[in-house]
Image 1 (cartoon, rainbow, N blue to C red):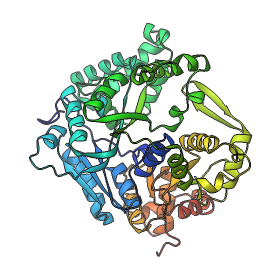
Image 2: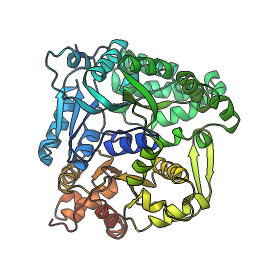
Image 3: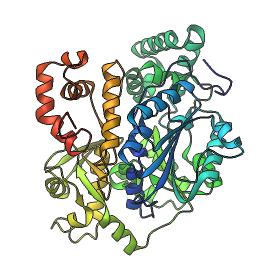
Image 4: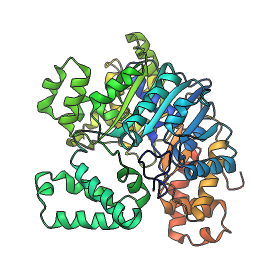
Length: 488
């Protein structure tokens, strides 16, 4: 279904709640600093906006985990904005604001409801909207992003997503013939039948079979928004860079930290060829070919502000990081990347993992005193921490732990929604200024711990409760996601 403001965008099924860690202010500031540029300071008030926020989970978690900032979510979908506003009101979040506006309306507004912004972020939607709306996004960035502000643009990219264009047309046409939900089912069945019958595209492009498997794991609401719009298009990085440049923004790198380390993200035989390319757009295009890139998370800065060597060292040393639940405590690691498995030597990673094994945060400068990193001027430790961020083993932390009350209030509201049948993939964790993944059984076990008299809590198996109390609960409490006791 399309509304008058949808411009060909599918709105018939509600978009599910997702959380994207790469969009949070602490993650962005840490990655920008690692890339050698000056990030907007997070020690005082700052502003952040998500364009195309859907039901608002990323915005809500970011706001609850970072009470010093002011957060805005924008979407034209009335139901999505109503959901986000209701959850914010239930949680008492006064630093999260949601605007029901199309991108065109936001540009055309005589007096913008958005203040000057330190961060503008969006995930996926740039590939799903019309060229006119993509231009509107760039005008919003041009008009509202402060000098030195950061934009994170995540989108389906060429060439890795190009083979999916025929798949998208099958799903889109099936939906037009049968309606969104039944059309998705029949379209996926058709694609499975073609693959299993030996269709040529699947034979020539083996990865397309994996992509189809990945598509089938998503709920219908996601697939409708991802594939059923009239303007679905994997974008070329050079085109996005040119559009961002028209908005006064220069390219910095990727919000996916591994992709900023050529030695572990590019096939070895391509590294010298790509490293010799002087033009940034051409070099990034070559990287996309080398990785067969399907999704990019580009970082741009309004007027790039590179740090001096001394400033870069000082900014790195001031950063804080901690291990996440389930992180390995030592040993060699294996990283499963787009170019295949990459082995991480124990000598590089074990000292860092061992130093953070107690779950407490430490400063980068303190870790730099470890013998394994002492002579590297920060480069080896910076690379190790970035890889472990990407792998989900470590996470950057705020300079000062924020008040956990807003995050815990949001988490209680999320748990109540889960008890009522809602589907939420994570909770706010103020100790890292972001969110943590949370399987449904763990969420229900948390609810049983907080409110054991609720019917949904009573249905949690005893074994799940026991594992939660001994393993998950202490980790979530250290991260500030849950209080010290149920009565708090």
